[in-house]
Image 1: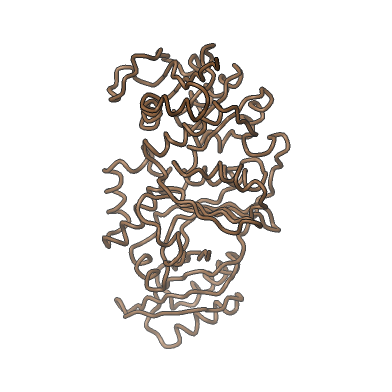
Image 2: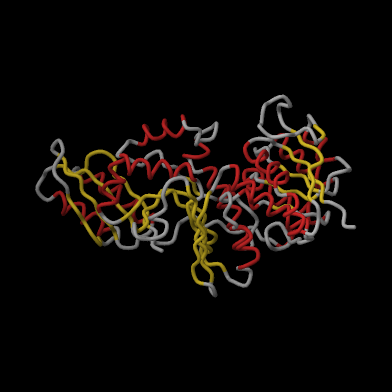
Amino acid sequence: MTQPLRLGIAGLGTVGVGVVRIVQNHADMLEKRSGRRIEIVAVSARSKTKNRDVDLSPYDWEDDPVDLAKRDDIDVFVELMGGDEGPAKAATEAAIAAGKDVVSANKALLAMHGQALAEAAEIAGRSIKYEAAVAGGIPVIKALNEGLAANDITRVMGVMNGSCNYILTRMEDAGLSYEAVFDEANQLGYLEADPELDVGGIDAGHKLALLASIAFGTQVDFGAVTLEGIGSVTIEDIRQAADMGYKIKLLGVAQMTGRGLEQRMSPCLVPDTSPLGQLQGGTNMIVLEGDSVGQIVLRGAGAGEGPTASAVMGDVMDIARGFRMPVFGQPAKDLRKARAAHSAVPAPYYLRLQLQDKPGALAKIARALGESGISIDRMRQYEHQDAAAPVLIVTHKTTKTALDEALDEIANTGVATGSPVAIRIENL
């Protein structure tokens, strides 16, 4: 008779409780689909007495997740604590050293220490699986590692933080300022305890670094991800971008270029008719492009108890079936450290300027752009506000270096008031 697969779960927050519920409610289905009984043996969390609305009495309790990871009677250590250091790192390392497979939802841990953990696991003949660490219930890691394994991936991009997408779409729908919607999202519990992880692009940047490693066969390198959050996006930008046929999204993009691996997480404009442009609320969307498959789009819930626990259990099922593969799709020892691209590939940009009501003001702006090698695709001027006129410009493709040079020159013309806003446009 096949032995059951025995789980030790560290972390009983929203996701951990969701995993317990799936194991309890679908035990027979899981066994039929995996060929093994899946059982929870022991659990660990910060508080034993907290009411979690799920029956934990059948399981042993460990106060220390490291002790849980070392238990002889578990086969898989399920790490759902979070954090890139401390108990999560120590317990994961202990589990690998004790010969356990690991299933994790911890993008920060893997983005910061993924290479070392992958090497240790593969030397020990163990797996680290982490579908739940990226885009919640969307099986994007499985898509890259399995379904698209025969493709040379050319670009990975997407909306990878539902909280930011909620804020941006809520601003547009309700006509509210960033500050008002930020407070609303915080009160609703949509943001991390440290909101900067969400709105600063850090959480999404962790996810992008993991996807880039799989897609391009490189060592995971979160430090090379260029980060820009959504705090500077105004309701005026959202309205006026919409007037030009665009939506603003916090967009992650990774692609291998002649200058190296480009990884960036920043607000971008996307066409409002595109799949990303139509994405609403807290939903995530990942776009994968390969030389054989072309472009595919994956859309779904990026967080929440059910979707994330579903991803955790998908990984557990793979282990139960005996399916193993390298952590980042290729043996960790063979992954190369990518040269970081210090400049992004050329793209069109959206510019918003406030120009003084002076003769020749527009001509000076056009000249400053032209002298930096930037041509104008479209331009729109709005009614004057306090002796200044809002002007929107969409450029043809240019480099960030050329754009920065032009913006410095515009500042010297004496006709622009305030700070110009420049947002990259991604066409897909």
